[in-house]
Length: 169
Image (cartoon, rainbow, N blue to C red):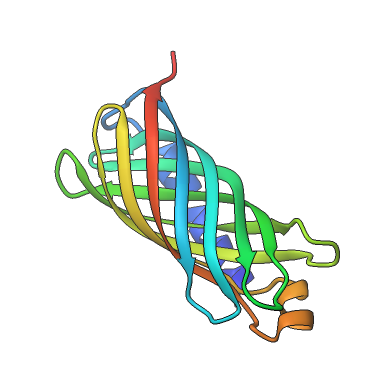
């Protein structure tokens, strides 16, 4: 089911991108720090950093592509878990600075034997010329390491994304 959902979202994104005659804008890049908290008892603090590319594709809408690193720090006897997310998505601006967004993609586990996981991540935020601040929820539920060794069955988090953004020329 997750593969079907991901396929539909990606096809939609590429369809939207092929009709991008409205509101062409420059490419932007953002570099962020992302402190968060895990939503399960197995992990405590979460910290990540990412690089995001953004391009306007229609009035009030931008295509985004994000990658980086996310680390779930161990709590008690539970081993830490890290992954590299690769997520395309969209941001919809309700007005000049307020937006909601969503990304779906894949996470590549950094712990031996963890494999890959489907990832989805809704976001709400404020975006200004050089600063982007958002709150996101991220769910990466399919890592083998997590299921096999910690019995938590997931890496989920709420996080604050604080980014410095600039225009690419």
